[in-house]
Length: 394
Ligand code: SF4
Ligand code: SF4
Image (cartoon, rainbow, N blue to C red; front, side, top):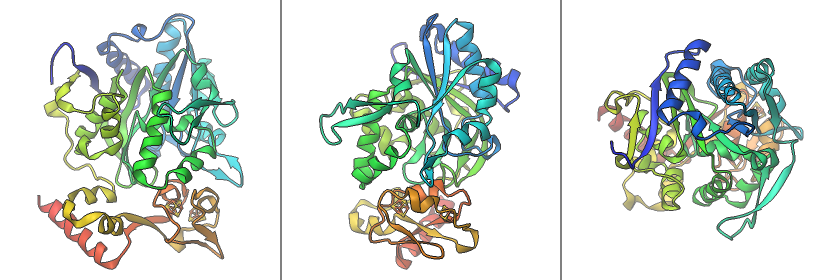
């Protein structure tokens, strides 16, 4: 992975979130990408698109860590530009978005205020309808106005596994540029995973970041993006190519980027480079990087099923959400945010699996982590156990 004309991804080690260390290592990462001044000019309005999935503290490793955001704010300010930190959280509580609480709980509001940077809640900052670049339905995409008003967009994701998409990083982070409940609408319009990926990439295409800086210090493994477990990786990554950055991050956690359909479709659409052989990794020796014991999401096992098994059986194997009654507090977030209207509330939420589109939003948004993921049939569950056993042996 070397060569002058290759897409470049910078990877530097950063063992913890001590602010001085993060400042130095973010700076080093940016230097390896030619310096932030290559992307940002004096007077620019620079949007830092963070990951504020839900109102959770930094130690849960669900949101971008405030130390990484602080380091970027300071770098942008040092160039005489104006940093703006923004996102829209997933889910509503009785019609109200959770973004404001996410800003506070994540610690990002506090660092932004202290450093004099603006914060914008995409749910309330205006929305612009943009023509879908593919010219198909949905004909228009609704994007938060501050994203389109920015001179420079920097995506600042958290490295996490994802129960539905297998991986979430720089590319998927841009889905948060869709304000509030409109996110559910796109799930409703595209119930099949492949169709949803196409819309996700339409959104990525119209909001394409100039730069990506990934928080890979404490990451998430297992059934992310919210219900997995924090995992120390100790890395910061940067690239002007979000697809390449995600591909390298996948490689590091032992997930073949060829298995991540978001990255493969993005590469097919020339939105970035997903082929590791064509990516130059700088800053750290790529041979040192892969982490063998990173837990992948339940659905990652589907990739081990031979193709002759067919799509019907694959559908049976796909994980579905099951509620653990003892953990549920009855908050109804899952009911209010199910794009298919597949959850009704009696004395507790009940999922109608005939209507469920397997988007796993309920699993992602439940604050009590009351949903577990399990294959649809007993036979499929047995097959998954067998695959898990084979995976452990191999
Ligand atoms: S399952 Fe989770 S999101 Fe749904 S009502 Fe119970 S606690 Fe709330
Ligand atoms: S029940 Fe859960 S996985 Fe099924 S459609 Fe609703 S939110 Fe998506």
